[in-house]
Each structure stands twice: as C-alpha cells, then as structure tokens.
Image (cartoon, rainbow, N blue to C red; front, top):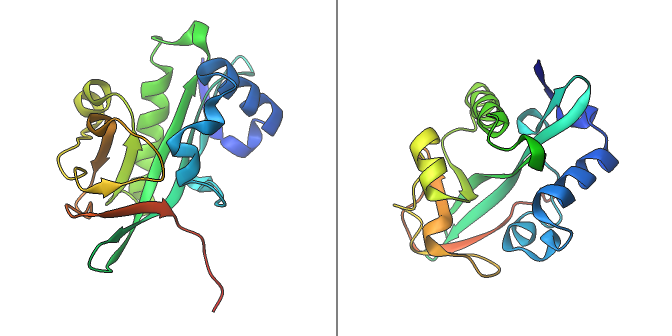
Length: 170
C-alpha cells in the first residue's frame, strides 16, 4: 500500500538517489534547477511516496516570481520535480503524488498560480495545465515552449521573466 508523507521524512540521501535514477545525474544543469536556485522547497507541498517503507516517488514545489516587463511581480509556485522509481513508473505513483500536492496547494491557498516544465499531454489531460498564458515568459535557460505550463486564476498572461523568489529582510 502506498503511503504519502512529508518529503522531509524520506531523507536527503534517499531523495537524491531517487532523483538521479529518475532523471540522471546531469539533472542539475536543467533550467528548472536554475529557477529554484537559492530557495528552499515549500514543505507543505513537497511529498514522498513509500510502499512497504521503500521510497518510490517524490514531488517538490518551490517559490518563484514572475516579473512582468511592466514591473509587476506575481508570486508563483514551481511544481517539480515529480520523480518516480523507474520500475514503478506507469503504476499511478506520479498521479497520486500530483493529486496530493495539488490538494495541499489548495488547502494552503497556493493553487492560484502554479507552473511546471513537463509533458503537456499528461499534465494538461489529468491536471489542467496548459501553455496558454506562458508564451511571453522568459526563463534563465532553455525550455521547449510547449512544455512551459501553468494553471490557476492568477497565472499572468504577459511578457516577463521567471526567477527564484528569495525572501529579503527589510
């Protein structure tokens, strides 16, 4: 039976090993890693899936900001990575994690502007993400435009830049 827990219960070494198996050890060079540089994952939205006490999946969310060309700043939640043990892919683990994460985002009031870089057929079909409002977004690295997805009523449809949202002391 699959159990969903807080990600912090999984242990850093186990999480990193799973991410390497799911995405390869070169994953740190991807644009999504640049988006979350210097930030900490959002604990309430970062989850782990265990089966029989074995880590089989993780999902993490990160605070980012869309800065429009007109100067307006919109806080967004970057969802990902969603990692599933390769032998367990297609078992519904990713969908279970996504549903739990999106439910947690709704409870926390963070579901109004969520973005991710991923497969539009999967994330659109099952979770309502689309590239409809992201065409003018610039990221700190390459991205296939059709894979830059978002959902929520506060997602900006404007030109601007996405970057890490780091709390600054006044």
